[in-house]
Length: 468
Ligand SMILES: *[C@@H]1O[C@H](CO)[C@@H](O)[C@H](O)[C@H]1NC(C)=O
Ligand SMILES: *[C@@H]1O[C@H](CO)[C@@H](O)[C@H](O)[C@H]1NC(C)=O
Ligand SMILES: *[C@@H]1O[C@H](CO)[C@@H](O)[C@H](O)[C@H]1NC(C)=O
Ligand SMILES: *[C@@H]1O[C@H](CO)[C@@H](O)[C@H](O)[C@H]1NC(C)=O
Ligand SMILES: *[C@@H]1O[C@H](CO)[C@@H](O)[C@H](O)[C@H]1NC(C)=O
Ligand SMILES: *[C@@H]1O[C@H](CO)[C@@H](O)[C@H](O)[C@H]1NC(C)=O
Image (cartoon, rainbow, N blue to C red; front, side):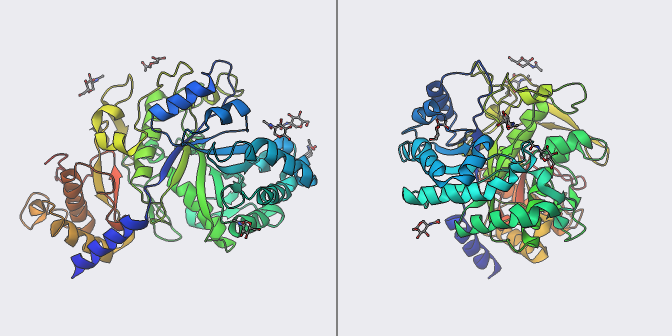
């Protein structure tokens, strides 16, 4: 009975959940980048089907035409006041920069401004009026249903983000801009754009934040004292804080996209953690995480949609060394490090996940201080204690029954019976199922009761096989 219900649930889930999508930010603050048409070839060769720009450069939009690549374009902050104050300016902008290219260039959304609340030119008051005018202009061209409008916010828009369940927006922003913006996003079926960088939180608090937690590696995670949910990565905790902030204002129906996240491969001496190995770990694990299709602890069923920052190292960016080293690629188009970017590569296994010139193993210090050695590229499936006993038990019954997992080792008297806990037993069974399915995308989900880990689970003396 239980397993029938569960497999029904499973098939329903697969019927209408996406796996989550990976896009990439194509920033161009550099004097040595390949031509736009070469860049489009690069994107295609990497299987990247979503890209985000910081403007509406005509060469770039033309090069992207007929590529099938979805594009988020931007209206720069400098144009916010004119756009807000003058509907005809907005109309002309949409005509010259959007409608001329659409639909050949698959423009999916317009980021109206970027991190506007921290713009030193105080453009915040223009934001919502500018978004409204652009939306009105899109309607004039019948594009308002096909092209969304939003505006990426920085995490600094939050007053509180820890624990995640206490997330709230800065009081002074709520009335003037957050509520009117969320109203508009809701009304136009759009989504909140969020730029989130665990790296920044980590460099400021490297004494308290375990690196493994920031890099999506196996770690004890944190338990939110407000709602009891366990979270295993800093990015998910940050996203859940934004969800909580929206929820507190009554906007729990507005969706969210991470429009920027990344980790630099190089930094100044004080930029602790800015290394090639950590960047490969963060971005590689993030891609694997997103492509499993499960969401954050607060919204397990909502797949994550993420744009990595960034496509290239950008040599003309100012600021610390890290700013010029977020790229996945050098301007030569050579990879800075090798990570999977597509489902096929994730499923393909070891080769594509080995860092370009790294070693095949990394040493991580867990929050408890123990050192464990693990191989890069291997993944395991682990039970998610957050979903509650009933769901875990149902999923465990399914895995050991119809699912065909090898559950002999978790029987009483066998090697993996201890510790005798539901999470430990379910992890063993889920991992067996996942490995038997050759780590196929979607085979470590169990309706949110499981997640993919890049280090083997640790339960007593139990060994978790990676092949059957
Ligand atoms: C976009 O539209 C504006 C206003 O019509 C125009 O001045 C500008 O050159 C266009 N291109 C870009 C990249 O903004
Ligand atoms: C602020 O506005 C001035 C004048 O329009 C412009 O030159 C400058 O680039 C703007 N600064 C930023 C950070 O947008
Ligand atoms: C922005 O606002 C701050 C605080 O109100 C003010 O000190 C500053 O001069 C303003 N900057 C510009 C460019 O208007
Ligand atoms: C687009 O405009 C049409 C006509 O004004 C309207 O019916 C529709 O609801 C709009 N769609 C969105 C997403 O705003
Ligand atoms: C990895 O390779 C890049 C380019 O080939 C080089 O610049 C970098 O120093 C190398 N890193 C290590 C750790 O060897
Ligand atoms: C990593 O493993 C691959 C495949 O097993 C092997 O070909 C490669 O030489 C190894 N690289 C290092 C640096 O050990």
